[in-house]
Amino acid sequence: MDTARAEHTAVVGMGWGDEGKGKVVDILSPRYDAVVRYNGGANAGHTVRVGEETFALHLVPSGVLHDGVTGVIGPGVALDPGVLLSEIDDLKARGFPVADNLKISDRAHVVMEYHKLEDRLSEGAASDQTRIGTTARGIGPCYADKMQRGPAVRVCDLLAAAGSGDRLESIVDGKRRAFQALYGDDGGLEAGSIARQLAEHAERLRPFVCDTTSFLHGVVEAGGSLLFEGANGMLLDVDHGTYPFVTSSNTGPWGIAAGAGVPPQAVRNYVGIVKAYATRVGSGPFPSELHDETGDRIRTRGHEFGTTTGRPRRCGWFDAVVIRQGVRLGGITEIAMMHLDTLSGFDNVSVCTGYRLDGRLLDTLPADSAAAERIEPVLEVLPGWQADLRDARSPDDLPAEAIRYIERIESLVGAPITIAGVGPERSQILVRGSAVLSPTRATVD
Ligand code: GDP
Ligand code: IMO
Ligand code: MG
Image (tube, rainbow, N blue to C red):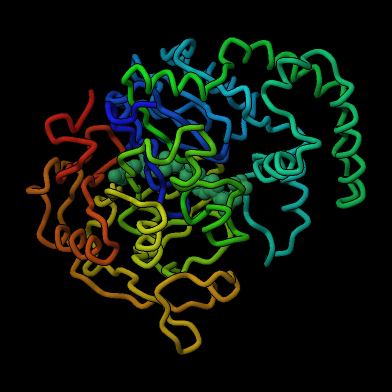
């Protein structure tokens, strides 16, 4: 594969999700031939604002709103056919037909009704200490079956077995007995109705399904370029995140090779997305969390309510410790900092620069989440700014305090902040020497 001709790029969340990946992918995608999802599933909710219209995309890659860009759902995605098909219907109804511009991997794993049921049952049975606070989209149970292999259903199985159901019947029977034993509830699972629905979904999905790995290799060999759209965030990564309060896939750049079938050295630019503060939805450690009216103010100003579940997001100060770790882990080449506008109006803003735990200073998160929950953040206080930034379009439009905030964070995390978001619209960004977005082409209409 000749990787020298095209500069492939990855956009990955560096926090606990919802950093603004959808917006950045939407802005970048006209420069690429294909936008590729490689991990996660409908737990993702990527918002794209086009004028007055808001699109919340769960499975369809955020680039498909642009002509000439192919959306690809790779082998590493947990695909819920019902969610995907209603997303396709919704896009069509709103004037964005999805046809040849979407390719679905025949190797992707299918999220089944019983995965969503198991997600709900296991969360319902968990204690306040052990409940993960999942999105209830069946992600964990689907990936668990993938690893176990026996009960897994892939897109290719769906197409081959549409209409027939012997294997499905035995899987559903096993699930029913396991759920009854574990939770005293089999959810009324019925193989026949599951099979009928799958058969319907399979026929509608069939035209989109192909070997996406070969398709991507073909794009690269023809000199085209790829944009990878990470779902969730690095701190939710199953290996490097705040386990067990994580999702069940590799969310960071290291997930791309496995989840899309493109070798790691092919990708030149790794754009890490952060917010100017931190948010988290669901349970788990969050050292810089604010439990006071400052946190409430950030939530209100930033409209911090989940795109997928509508849950209020927990809010806190920017955590330079975890983002520095993410820069190292992910080989991040530049950072896009969204929601700079949300931090306007504070007298002071703080950045978490280290952790205190049992009298010791730490510069990374401990593996043990119970210990991480007890961390006290070390905060550095910086002067805030009052100006409304929503109309800022160049670094020159920013107050000195906002520049100082950006520069301080750059030096703490070890990567340049080349893009800043100042509102949800495509046009509401400013660019500071980005390798992926030159100022002359900063916006799309
Ligand atoms: P994703 O999952 O990473 O794509 O992020 P979400 O779409 O779940 O959440 C990000 C939210 O912030 C969405 O409502 C976006 O429209 C919004 N947003 C993105 N960038 C900015 C920004 O720079 N400023 C403001 N105020 N909102 C933004
Ligand atoms: P995007 O792509 C925010 C969180 C859930 C929960 C944990 C496990 O929009 O940034 P799961 O349903 O994956 O088993 O939930 O991970 N989570 C997200 N939080 N944004 C997301 O995606 C998320 N995907 C998963 O809230 O804490
Ligand atoms: Mg989201």
